[in-house]
Amino acid sequence: MPSTEIAIRLVRLPHGEGLPLPVYATEHAAGMDVVSAEDLTLAPGARHAVATGLSIAIPEGYEVQVRPRSGLALKYGITCLNTPGTIDADYRGEVKVILANLGSEPFAIKRGERIAQLVPAAVQRARWDEVEVLDETARGSGGFGSTGR
Ligand SMILES: O=c1ccn([C@H]2C[C@H](O)[C@@H](COP(=O)(O)OP(=O)(O)OP(=O)(O)O)O2)c(=O)[nH]1
Ligand SMILES: [Mg+2]
Picture: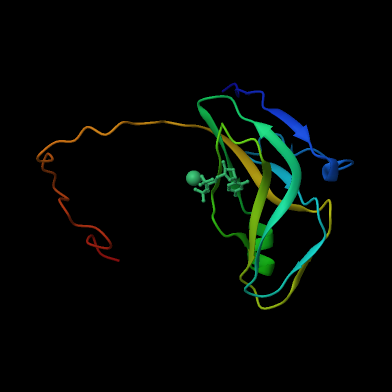
């Protein structure tokens, strides 16, 4: 199946000079790994909006999701607190990665180190169609484990 690509305009901010742009690490990777534009140490339980040194203009109808890297999560407890982070098509500020340290050790990040992955995605918008009563279903209002563990 052919893959489709969208072009996303990108500006490298002064503090992002010299850093690699986000890239797909393998041929069919879904996310582009993005690197930190700063050195920092995250204490256990701490969180920080980590600079990427990038501003982007996503085409209308798309978003970019900011997702954690599983290796950092599994080995060190480092995750994106708001995963998946949402970069809106009309956002022009710096892309930041809200990292949290859920591990038990301080975690040092060096400028240029891969901290998360960016996944472009199509956005389905909706409008509300307010009605008096909803149609009935077999599930009804059952949820939150109603079908068993
Ligand atoms: O991981 C993230 C999440 C968000 N953003 C930026 C881009 C996004 O378009 C904007 C707003 O994000 P969101 O809507 O998730 O946050 P909010 O708390 O609702 O802020 P706002 O009131 O600005 O929408 O912040 C990031 O850089 N990284
Ligand atoms: Mg918002």
